[in-house]
Image 1 (cartoon, rainbow, N blue to C red):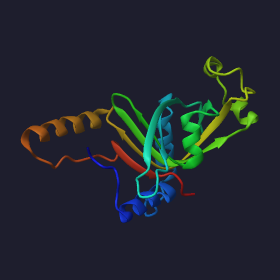
Image 2: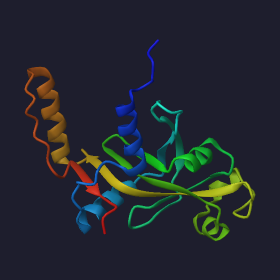
Image 3: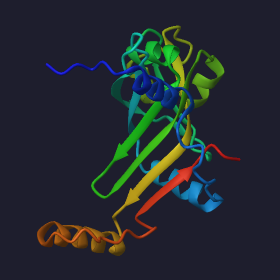
Image 4: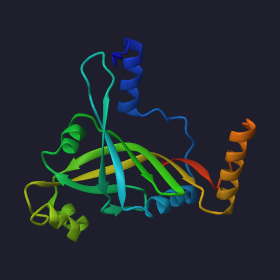
Length: 198
């Protein structure tokens, strides 16, 4: 059985990553790059939301993922979800504010790191509420319902849907057969954006 216990230096590094993030040196994304990232995210309706248990002293934080419907996506990439007040997602968010959001289709992929907060706000719930929420709650005034607000700090996207993307897949397959690792990646296919910078 493999132990998950880490040494203190590893634990400190892991804790710092989830507490503050590790991309302070990532350059600020341009307006067009941020808009491109948000546009790709808006193609999805379901996200995989990952939050983290703090873990006891000396142990690495434990991730927990669940699919969540994205109810609204702001122009800056802020995502809104609705969940039950006492769900696992809510309890983990209260204990540790770092979170990951991942999205995947046949040809497009996105991963975002950022912070998430629980919002007990009926006005916000009314703004983002959809008919789908009524399956689980008795309207936005239901005391069981709360909003989760995710604010991205870093976004990484892959788009292999166009001709350049098909060429990349062909070159990757060729490299797998020939052993040539020199697969050229085009900026249109892969983009990393600092979403937090103003």
